[in-house]
Each structure stands twice: as C-alpha cells, then as structure tokens.
Image (cartoon, rainbow, N blue to C red; front, side, top):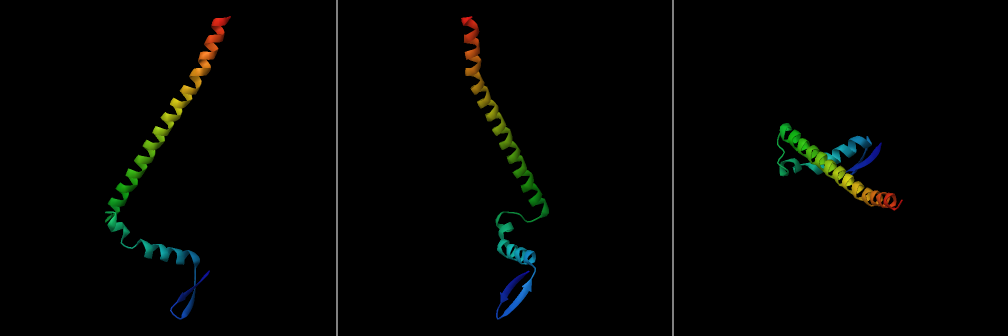
Length: 86
C-alpha cells in the first residue's frame, strides 16, 4: 500500500495501481508520436524488433564462430609444425 497526497487529502492506494497510473500518465501521447495508432501498428513494431534482435544474435554468433576459428588456427599451425619436426 502507498500513501498518495492529492491536494490536501492523503489517499491509501495499491502500490501497483499507483505505478500503473503514473506509467499511463507519463506515456500519454507517446504512442501517437511513434506512429502507433492501432493494435496492428504495435504488432508490426514488435515483429520488427524481434527480427532485429534475431539478426543481431545471428551476427554475434557468426562473429564468435569466426573469432573461435581464428583462435584455433594458430594452435593448428603449432600442431602441424610439431608433426613436421618429428
């Protein structure tokens, strides 16, 4: 529970409800600024974000695989050199 001052009154309010009210008040008009007018607009935005995140993960995995291959190359060269010395 949260105590909230409204004018010259103190109101006891559920903390989650108070936070949600503050969020809604702070977000007022932001959706329109972002070009989100319908549920379909929001769904399209979420799909774009997920696509970007998927692509970033793929790029990171490819970079990691490339770096792992580069790290393994000197070790393979050392093994090949030691076999030639035998």
